[in-house]
Image 1 (cartoon, one colour):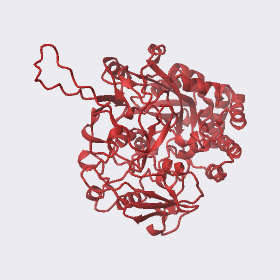
Image 2 (cartoon, helix red, strand yellow; image 1 turned 60 degrees about the vertical axis):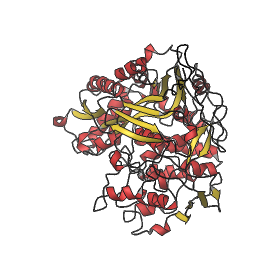
Image 3 (tube, rainbow, N blue to C red; image 1 turned 45 degrees about the horizontal axis):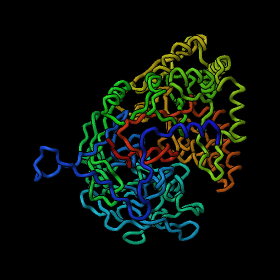
Image 4 (tube, one colour; image 1 turned 90 degrees about the horizontal axis):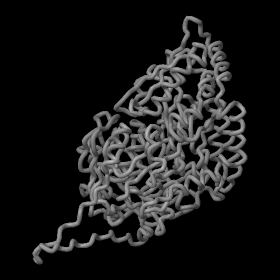
Length: 611
């Protein structure tokens, strides 16, 4: 592990009081700490009943509202918040006793997955588990959920996470994509590797051999693999079976988690109240959780300083005020901010040109962007993140390996982190020539679409508006197109003519073990991919990485190098900077871990309030 990464992780040590022991994990759950009874004051009559314990209310925020509680389809990462509070999954990650790592804890599954043979695993389900309306959760519930997730008629965007995540489910893709190019005309549900064995046992069949039960647990650790309530789902489904209102509001949703989702004032506040009947209730200390929707950074700062939210992440405009704050924590991430490129804008005559994309790649001053615009981030002309591979058997990250360093050296040969205005202009001229663009069509104005609340991306756009006409000799201009009230994914659906560039920062936690998986979202097989440029050669090289036998990590790194070089050659999108996370917690929050844990985080949902 690099000294830089070690420093980042060590810097996350909290200077507030942290619980050293958080109870057992797989066997009996810890008892919740009970507050001491209130001692009567001197003037209080002896017969007076002590006051009730103060309600523990955890106050946090989201930068944008959750579009839907249909976790089978919602691709926005912020939907993980209601999924964590209001839903249960097979297993959950829970802090270990020393607060230095996490362990797997049973949730809707009981015990480890059971390996039947090389390709089959059985999962025992918790008997007596129910939805919050009392409906049972059993094998039939899960089979219905799986079948709806892979329903070819609806083609929900999170389906990939069921059939191809940590493991690949036999005939999962074939069933979902049946009748489309490259797939069978018809596939029966019975042929998919998801089976009910009995009322409380299901079995999965994988295409590859796996031996570690934690691989199966990791596969099911996703918000879309939480059960849906069949009765409510059928009530919400349209007559033609193509659309559903499930999760559109609380009247069309049924939870099964440790908290009831009790109030949803859209674009204002979400309120969750503890479910004392939940089987894991003793793991959770908060009585209520308030999640405010706060798009504006200044509003977050004000709420944090007033104690109305208990943590927040400063941006480039606010971070300087907090760099020396003892409450500040710092840690790396699996996210490299980047700009997606629309390759199919009918109004952009060069949108389909690789030379055009290369021009954009070399036109970004990443050092300036990372420091002055995004605020103490790390510039990056490559895409595989700095944590990729850190959880592999030998702990060697891809970036510090000889293979990752070779790609970094190639990028640096072009200029600092790939920035080279002369190369950018040369590639633009090539794109103009190859696409037959006339002088009358110049300058070409490209649309840079952003959520109007993203102040850093807006600042970068304003900088590029000034730089592009100069750098590109007046042949290329940039227009900022703001939008609000929807995700970038949904905005792009409004039409290919609406955008050319779209900032993003997709993450892939699996890359901490398998570095190549950070490219997963840019494959032709991922229906929710943020870009619209598909390269068969890129897909094939990703599969070559997948085909490397587990344990042959050096060869995996070598194949990942080929994949990253291909990514840069085709410019699948434009990397900008490696995200470094900065976060502050108020002094009344007692976190269950001693330091940030990659793949788990701070575990705030299992925290407590003190003082």
